[in-house]
Image (cartoon, rainbow, N blue to C red):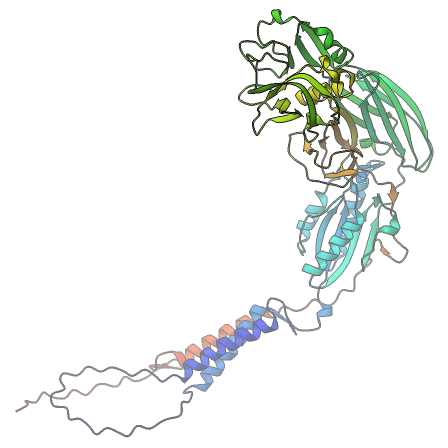
Length: 638
């Protein structure tokens, strides 16, 4: 005997509490009746009888027993008592339906997922009526579609509604989830059933097998050649040239010869023919020149059973340039620093030609200060002491360089300290300002972030090209840091990759500053969780989209539009059960006793009320004779 709804402790506790309350009620004395009389004037006090202690006893023991028995029957009905061994009761199974990207492959007119859904429905119909089933959709994550339920209609609807995702199959995680679900929620653990093609990334020996595993395999030979990834980056020799590397893989069992073609803006820009052995990968390299941005499509010109990985589309950003306006009466000092950089477009004008803020990306004012401070990002070089952009503390001559500040972006890589500056201005600075170079007496170069509607600003108290620093490597590095700080997006190294959804590993530069800011954001600028160590960054994205990884001056854009296809076909060991079972051991379904127990309990309470609970005038349905009160005549008191 076992209880379905209550534990044995809960049942005994409820029965004991209710039975005890009934016994206490039956042991209580009956309440005394209160009579009203006309007067107490002529009443004589009777002698007080001796108080006697009587043992409490139950006046109606059969009524008490009948009520206790009725309560017992009702509690047994609530607990849903079942007779027989627990081993003969229903079991709880978990059905893992493969919904990975590979299940969208076609074998003839039907997809692999259609075959798996048919096998899952056949398994569902083979289960005994009392068995419960949980449906779990398995791809990169194990997602339960239902709980443990006997509702066959709900399970069938969930199976038919399952669709292939864009991620690969993590079979070990699916098995672990199914096992944990049975441990936590199953009454009696049944089978763990896997229905699918089982193409995974890890070798089959690395997948731990659960007990009572059954496999419903999909047997279909599909020839497929697909794109694994497409990587693009600007050429270090010519920033207008994109270097493109496309990787294709042959998933089939026969060698294939395919054509990889590129289109930009709908026009063909390159193609290559690859001969790929079975189970191998090959790369195709391309070079493509463009300043404009647009959509680049990489396509494999072949017909196979899985078309989802034959095409990858990425968006190429336009090449950005930094527009610089230089107002100087000595431009020959600055030309060597800017003219050879293809990322910069420079216009040189004399100081007298300044008529107002030109609205460029960077404004350089050399040796003069306008009446109205410009709003554009500005580099001040040796401004006049009569109109300094920052509070001027003093002018120092023959000043020894004390130190650079490598902790901010403008001082990175600068270490020259054995040089003296003939003359420099020293400025005061606030808590938000960034001192770059300090000499004896204070800060000679100060940077101020954008604030109060004005752009960024860098102030140099001396002209580096007129000092002893012109012979040092620190001068071009200083100006390069200034330009990069003013417009980091122009000098950022951009790489674009078309890849599959799932986990991505991004290599980090070996000399990267540990405190350098890292950003991983989606296309709508939402942050994405990630982990890092000294040499790599790892993030996960479970749905198609674009992810941008920004690490210092390097930006990598991942266009995760390719499906994730496993490299290995997992084959279950020979000891694992396969196929639809011909027939389960169907134990006799336990008989439901609770309706009869509830009926008997209710009849017992009704009988107790009819026999013992009604007025004494009604006994067994016959009315008792009414005793007529005797009326005494009135008498005078005198």
